[in-house]
Length: 314
Ligand code: RIB
Ligand code: CA
Image 1: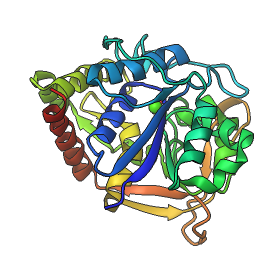
Image 2: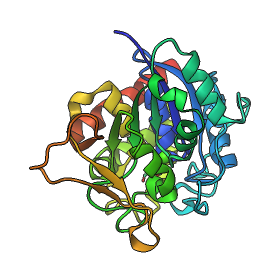
Image 3: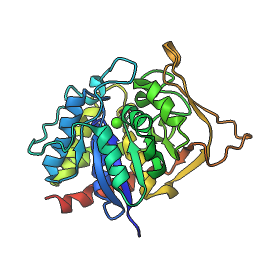
Image 4: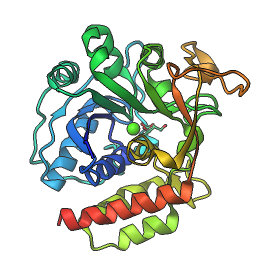
């Protein structure tokens, strides 16, 4: 099967790390052309350190490009309470690898334009880098196959009652991306609240003798210390959903619908107003919004792939 060229734009971030590991377990499906970082869960320095730290931990050489340090307009607000002061639940990665570029925007442009095939972008943090890319270098638009976005929601938020964190952090950037007419698949909270692992899954990971699974167990265990995990029994791994869709689209139901990002101040900031009225038919030029997922199959495939990585990275 032909491999899909991808670049993952992330703010590691506990679930970002697990999503990256899932992508590395599927390199028979992907040419991972690079990883770009963006300020979100933590500062740009910390999220970039976590990305290079993961490469060091795996001794893996994927190009990492450091992105933008703050949203287009709003103030940055790291999510220390959810991801910890260092962004990965205070897990200490080694640091033997360096970044490839300190400018994610030119790295994205150069990499996309140099690729013979179109490129799929997988943004799983605030959309600041993506917005700057398409505004600064519009020539990339025709070389972008798809945006598989973790962000937004069709039914309520997490960082506020109405907004999902990635969109809330930089609503102006999200508006630019969702209005771009690029082909979009949206993994919103309405499905990612069901894409994750149970407490006992994480307990098994914690007891694992495998390098990758034990690390994932330790960083995911931090999530359960927070008050955002459903009665301590299940933790969403939001970002893995945007990668899983590319490997197993059959797990999902979707509908094309218009998605408008609210850039107002106050309680509606970052709300993604998705038109869920099912009597209105939107064509394929509108975002493909995931509306349901086979939760148990997602969990089984994610766990199977993480344990598979233990055999690759000893
Ligand atoms: O709302 C969930 C998103 O916010 C995830 O990408 C998580 O990593 C945080 O960035
Ligand atoms: Ca993220």
